[in-house]
Length: 330
Ligand code: HEM
Ligand SMILES: *[C@@H]1O[C@H](CO)[C@@H](O)[C@H](O)[C@H]1NC(C)=O
Ligand SMILES: *[C@@H]1O[C@H](CO)[C@@H](O)[C@H](O)[C@H]1NC(C)=O
Ligand SMILES: *[C@@H]1O[C@H](CO)[C@@H](O)[C@H](O)[C@H]1NC(C)=O
Ligand SMILES: CC(=O)N[C@H]1CO[C@H](CO)[C@@H](O)[C@@H]1O
Image (cartoon, rainbow, N blue to C red; front, side):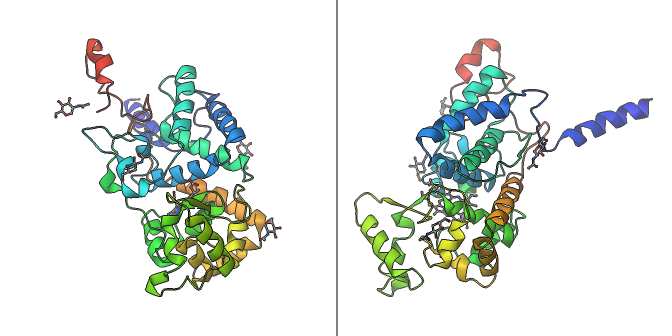
């Protein structure tokens, strides 16, 4: 009896402490619908939200795992991931806040911010023409957000350099090429590809691997003031589809890393396959997103469920009378 009791106490938490589809069904059955409604409302007026959420999810998962560390605001005393160079132009934070607010009313302190990012990204992908894949949930929110931990590949990385960032997260070349298909939506600022337009690697000429028609189009866009943006997929810029791969095979990749996917010996066959297999891409993309969503997650009793996605919860040991004041961001 005693042994059985100990056994259950030790084993049950281990068994339950993992991501699964429908994690909130017993505790907050309407959780996924609440998130979906917020995403749908936004998508109706702003289709660029798909790109924003995809990039947010990627940056979250690649820094300390998918733990919503990217959402923490920096304060006067403490800078957070948002202050790191590569945070750049991650956007969509207010959508996560809106979903969190609705969830705290429906099911207080139950749904993690990390899961909100995951669910919202899936919904925005589905709305933009991608698969409505099942996401696993049960992530917990991290307690740390440190700009010095942000280490992401840059747009001029080679395929093998970029790959080292992915293998460090147990992701394969196939996963990387698939996930870079996210560049089928969204934009890049001219500062990330301007060098390709006129003075590529100091040659005084444009990057020979860029279609001259695209060089001229992007030169016009980037000739305008204030570091403007250009679509990453020149054809179906708001649609989650395999068009990105077709475009880079036509030398119409905007960023260097994107274009290199089409020519690098290791990635080119994967690119060719996706370019010719729309359904295969959708299937692989959904699987790779679920895999990315599992990187170094906190589960079980690790971390916490943040009440406000921008702030780590105040310490629970504080007296009730001081609780209000302790909510001030640290
Ligand atoms: C080698 C890996 C990657 C590199 C070097 C890279 C680099 C970049 C850069 C430099 C931008 C432009 C940002 C800006 O100008 O604001 C960008 C945009 C974007 N990236 Fe990536 N990225 C990579 C992988 C990924 C992955 C894995 C995803 C998602 C699964 C992703 C999704 C996006 C999206 C959707 C945008 C457009 C954002 C928007 O419109 O706001 N990227 N990426
Ligand atoms: C998603 O999950 C639901 C419920 O668990 C299941 O009925 C459905 O077949 C799943 N869909 C896919 C595409 O796996
Ligand atoms: C744009 O995309 C559509 C749909 O994938 C395709 O049929 C068409 O050929 C593409 N056009 C160009 C110029 O690439
Ligand atoms: C910031 O640090 C100062 C000095 O260490 C402290 O007095 C103040 O309360 C801190 N502010 C916040 C918001 O934590
Ligand atoms: C959205 C956001 O917080 N962006 C920050 C990214 O980091 C720079 C500094 O490198 C800040 O100025 C931005 O506010």
